[in-house]
Image 1 (cartoon, rainbow, N blue to C red):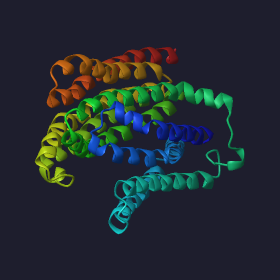
Image 2 (tube, one colour):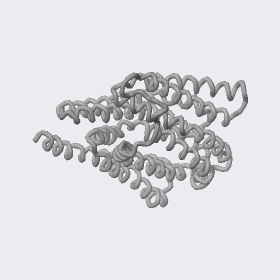
Image 3 (spheres, helix red, strand yellow):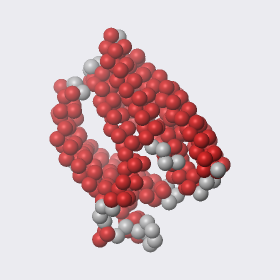
Image 4 (cartoon, one colour):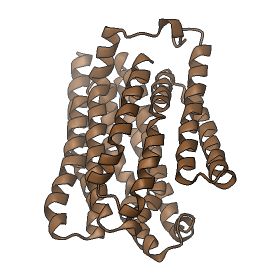
Length: 351
């Protein structure tokens, strides 16, 4: 919890400082850059809340409790919806109201997760008087979570490069991608949920040398992630016109949104091929390798593509196609590493 609060404060300060420069580097369209900066500054103020919820929910999930973190998100999401309406309809605060609603909703989820941890009676009990840095625990947390954190940072930087390329097509492209991303996130959250379950239960069973159970966890998590994500993405594609019209009525925006939805959201299930084996590897104490492979496949290759091929042929469909291509490459690498290391580790541990 000490790390959660400290990291959250650092990220909030950094976010306030770099919000405008990042938007300028990304070549945000002039007609939206001021609103985007305002949104980012208010959003970054809530980073401590986001960190507290993420750290706290991870603790509960590590104990096999995924229900209470879900309850916190449900309450937070409903509160966010209510406050968005309140701060834009009743109080006409525009983009500032949307950002404020999101930040306050994140605060609600953080408060709820803290409440659950404080009410715990045994080893998960949070005592605020004992909140401090424990060097050994910090080192262990960084050893497992550090590579994944660095992966997330570099992944975000690659997305900045991609977003800069998208911004070059104008505000219609930015709005269209934003509309399609709503459904893309829904699909990815399914994979993320199974990935979190995979790392939790793999670590527990690997620790007691229940290797057959580890194999079953990988198999079921991968199948469920692919199947359920494919079903949801299929629903989004089938009802794409009425769903996208919720966010836009512009033909120009709709054109870009449809391309993003069909090229990226439809094959979203492919991300399970590296998220699930990568999570299982982290559950076995191997965090650096899947992070490096994901960085190469999903980050560096995308940047290289934009700086070479896309620079010569600036086509929006070609730009979005880089996602499934890099998912295929990354999934092949991480999946191959998982099977190779699993065979070695299970044999060594059994011996």
